[in-house]
Amino acid sequence: MIDSLEAARALDDIEDMTRRVRQSQIYRLSSLLMVLWGALVFAGNLVTYLTPHYADKAWLSVYVLAIGGSVVLGATEKTRRGMSSFDVRSLLAFVMLFAFGFFVETIGHFGPREMGAFWPIYFMLFYCLAGLWFGIAFTVFGLCVTVLTLIGYIFIGAAFPLWMAFVNGGGLIIGGLWMRRS
Amino acid sequence: MAELDEIIHQPLRLRIMAALNALPAGTGLEFVRLKKLTGATDGNLGAHIETLARAGYVTVDKAFVGKKPQTTVTLAGPGRAAFARHVAGLQEIIAGAAAKPPEP
Image (cartoon, rainbow over all chains, first blue to last red; front, side, top):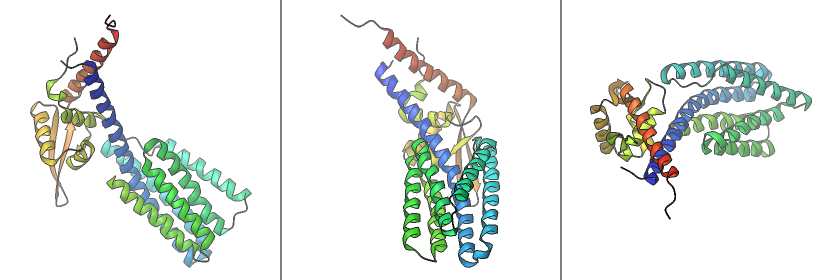
């Protein structure tokens, strides 16, 4: 027979393990999504840098492929691991995030350079917020990309899209791989 | 009277069961992931999984993913029920202690 102190310790252990497993599941799916988004964002920035004329079409394709891919990955993970993840609510959340972003972009009369800085920082804000619930890794990643984006926006000239290809696209890929190991 | 399961009560086995119980039914965890989550060594984790498997609490599946062998541990139905009883037992002990009148 154990005393109440030992029982409380055992329950704390159970709670801690439950939290760690859920965090690990979230990290696993997030890492897959980050690598997918990273590769597409890298391509989008590269096209913007090399052929600015096609930037609009490139970014539209990036968003459609990234959101479509996220839905497919979410559904696959749900089938394989029973983890409810990227569902209709997530899709609607993305639509709302993009709608608000486009609204800000329009009333702010952003140029290509401002848009190149705004979108990553806007998305990284949600990584920073997610970190408050799902693990510090998200916040650290969000802050790093935000700082590097601002450095590029202030100090890098015409090569800013190329800088963003590595900072945002490359950052997402590296962050995703790192999160997989966490 | 609180009913504690002697097999589950061992600290590492409790962590293994808690980790597997956090997953939806029928979903398992790879040995490597379980090792990371519990902080156990290979040998220690293997021995305790063996004990849980002998009790019918978990199932162990070995398969090849590409050329790499992969061991997946899944909580079995009797294991989930035993774990629920064990947690209820722990809660009962705490509730019993809280209900006890303070000693003079």
